[in-house]
Image 1 (cartoon, rainbow, N blue to C red):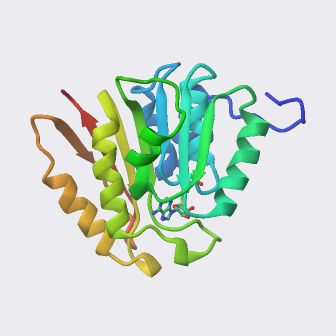
Image 2 (image 1 turned 90 degrees about the horizontal axis):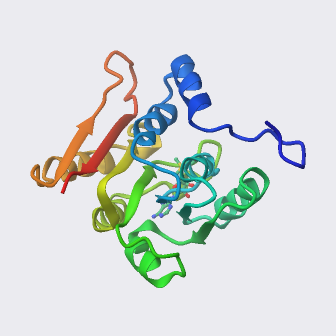
Image 3 (image 1 turned 180 degrees about the horizontal axis):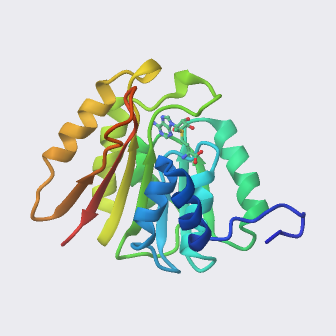
Length: 215
Ligand SMILES: C[S@@+](CC[C@H](N)C(=O)[O-])C[C@H]1O[C@@H](n2cnc3c(N)ncnc32)[C@H](O)[C@@H]1O
């Protein structure tokens, strides 16, 4: 499907599943996992907008009747993603802000977001740095942990927090270790924590992690 400018439009969940079956990339894996938690009209958050692939995915999952909030530290990420959404998601409701996800709660409470009293259906964190981008804008342990803690306060019942965890290379291991420790400590009566491993892949493969709010 193409929009009025002739650009290809992401066709939504079914295509995502087909792509996932071919590639098994972590982003596709996470998209498939969160899809069953998002309904049309839901509120979703992309805490690390980057090139806007996840933001666009969330817009299509929540539909034009939903609302997507996206945050990124980099102005270029916000500008690039705004252009992407204007082209591929015309008529959809979204708000993109240049800010750290450590201010997530304040941003949600302080922004003119339509009322979603039950909270967010899905919050996505894609950690690390933008491939081909400025590595100094990599996510950091402290702000990530604050953003993740805020996310628990914003998640609705049966909502899902998705975290793509990267490590090694420029990223190091500090953030990964901190996030895994944080996940381990979450109250098992309130949250279901799921970790997946690319078990036989070498060189510190990424870890898809999910938190589902059960009560
Ligand atoms: C791996 S990329 C995200 C990829 C993105 N989800 C996509 O679909 O293209 C990580 C992004 O997190 C952003 N970032 C780093 N620290 C951040 C912070 N404290 N708050 C918000 N964004 C941050 C970086 O600028 C970078 O764009």
